[in-house]
Image 1 (cartoon, rainbow, N blue to C red):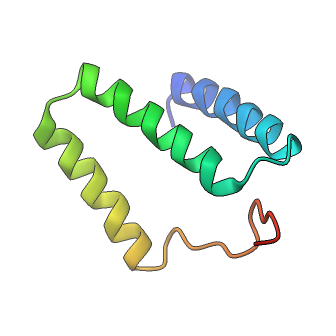
Image 2 (image 1 turned 45 degrees about the vertical axis):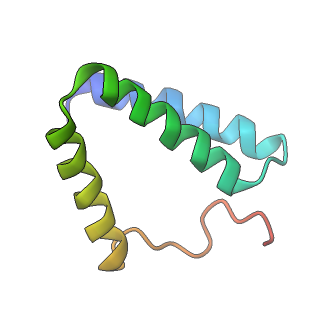
Length: 76
């Protein structure tokens, strides 16, 4: 994994931890992160690449690869 990606991941993980500690609903945290990510991609990537990335994410959810029932549970 590239060092730059690791650095980005650490910052995002800290931001998520902070937001969870503020007792914000996980769906709102995820929605804000997804919206921000899509905004970055929209400014730097063509639409077809974005669609491929999103399809990969959808495929991962459908296959069960991204399902983790107890991560960041907010009791809902």
